[in-house]
Structure formats: C-alpha cells, structure tokens
Length: 238
Image 1 (cartoon, one colour):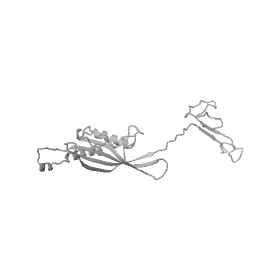
Image 2: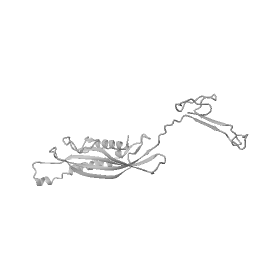
Image 3: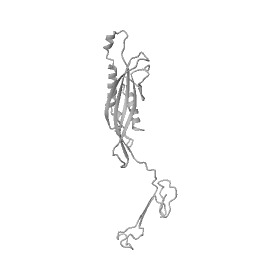
Image 4: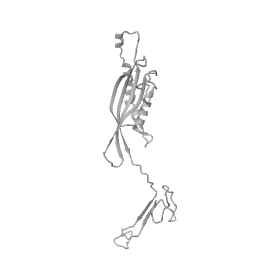
C-alpha cells in the first residue's frame, strides 16, 4: 500500500471514530462541490500533490526519496438561518461558529491523537512506528457555499496538511541463491607442506558444498532453490 493511501485511510478512520459533530459522515473523497441535501455536517478526506526529492542525489545503494504530501480535509456545515429575522439581525449571526467548532474538533482529533500518526510496525508486530515523520504546514481556507441549487445555506473549510515521510526502495534481486562451492588450496606450511614453494600448489585441501550432495557418503541436504540443471562434478552450477 502506498504511504499516501495509508495516511488517507487512517485519517478517515480516525475522524469517524472521534465523535465530531459530523459523526460517521466522513467520506474518503472530496465533497466540494457537494450534494447539500445530504445530512450535514460532513467531512471529506483526500490527498493532493505528493512531491518527492532524492536524499543523496545519486545512486548509492537503495534509492531514498523524501516526500511531502498534501492531505486535504474538507468540512461542510449548515449555517443558522431564521426567515423571521430582520436583515440587520441576520448580519449579527456568527455564520462561522459551527464551522470553527468542527475545525477545532478535527484538529484535536488528529494532532493530539497518536493513533493517527503512529501505526503497527510491519517488521516488528506488537511495536509501533511513525506513519509519517512530521507536519510541515497546517492551513485552513474557508469557503462560502453556493446557493443556486438549494435554499440551504452552508459554509465549508479546507484544511490542507503537508506531511513528510521518507521511503527506501531497496533493490529486488531476482537471481536465486542455489549453491555454494568453495575450494581452498591451503598455503600455510603448518597445514600443507606445499610441494610447490611458497604455494599454492594446486592441491585442494578443504572443500565446502552447500547444500551437501551426499557424494561423500553423508546425508544430502535439501536444495536451497530449484536449479535449472543438476550440479556438475566440475563445480559449475546453473
């Protein structure tokens, strides 16, 4: 799973469980433009740009990329209205109060919640690791709802969080490690008189075969992988 997908799904799950004013109306998609006949408040979560930058600028082992992801959280609320109010009285209503309250709930539900930015370490079950490394920016933009399609007055906010994380892309080696054949011509006089001074003299004193093929009378080991052709006595493997 891509990091941005993991972050997006974790954000949806965290907000749905946070008991904000939106309740379980947390959707993994944008809701602006939105169908305002649906119950409000509502929250939409999606990801935008994901910019990556190489850490070392070259090829030294695995590629290392540092990412900056824009996570967008849209909030839509219905603004209070009373047809009996005078125009001047309507202007005295704080139309953004409910929206600000929901923004505060969302911010607390995420930034104060380790379950949002921590996850189970796949390499060490039972331990936690960071879902991302940091929050570079946390920006909020308010949007007025359009009224040409409904009489329901709405306001919305877009919270855009810039999250950073890094990923190592270790190379995948497709070759199979099937067999080890090691032949040693000892040159230490204490172990080999060396008929050709100072050695090596071409005689093999120590051999290692992994897996053992049973040629020395001992048991044969199971194969490490499926070889294309059987082992050959001259030491060549395929």
